[in-house]
Length: 428
Image (cartoon, rainbow, N blue to C red; front, side):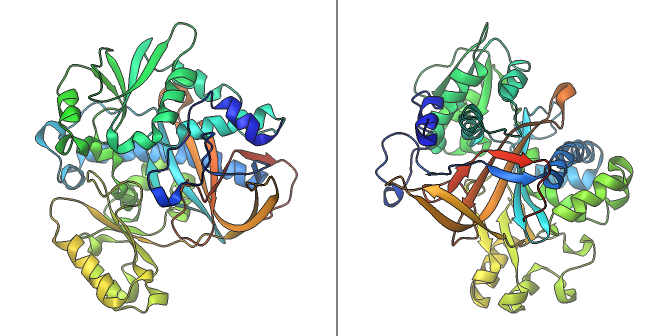
């Protein structure tokens, strides 16, 4: 079967992504609003092993961050910044999965952030089913995601989403019907405020800061439900990646992670720091700068850093708060850094920019012809974060984009499953 036809079968009629902006609509009406690859993206064996190692290390790292939050006053205060009183001093922390964004660079994998939201998980599952059922051996076994999730959820529940994330509603409905439901489990997906949610357990597919802009979200969060993930915005902050580079916690991480995992994380996580905490950065800032404002005075070629709003803000999702400082003039870079420095209600981070490597990728265009592009690659593996499977790979996909530093799923990106060649030499 043609891979596009197979994808339409596996989506069960759900649109994987509703294009939010009119100029990006491509005329497709089959719900497959992205470039389709004829093949999964192949890793070599060394890369596959490293991705598996990253899963265990990332889960251990999150455990360490939770411990720091609970026992270290400085970390506790930082991660509680800007949070409402009812979301501070959290005790129970539960996430089904952790999803790092891995950029493929000349030096291997670069980890630019860790996601906990479900947006993209449905697409990863559809891609894995489609290519797997067309005879490709992917790195995720069929039903692996479904079996894991169903072992961790109640028999009935609702995936609750907001108007802000409605573009992903097809994926969320697919997840409710095809992954969360089965045998004795019955789940649905619904937009908050459209109808009353009566199920006790809710899978939270909205952002906690939306309680300020959406009264329906505020009302739901004040009602009696069992939430998964928990209402713990402290662990959805990009600032978590800064702690591995903070010399106040180096010994703590070395002792709790062990040498191998500590060195792996230092290798793949670019140097990252919280605005205002610069004096604790391992190795200091470029050119011995005293604070982040000094970055603006570097030449563009030496200013390869990214400014990001860390979390719990309307501008911290989907790249809306991501500023590539090397793409700006000195004045604009300085302006953005000053805005971050003066904002005392939110955390901001600066992260060393890791340039994605151009990899040839093929997609099938509108006239069923094979077309090649040089794409920068983002691999998004999903790792279990609950129970005995903790750290195990449960889903994965690859996104390839051309002519951009911001690699994300869109109508212009190639999205595909992940496979590997056991005996293939390293290609990229």
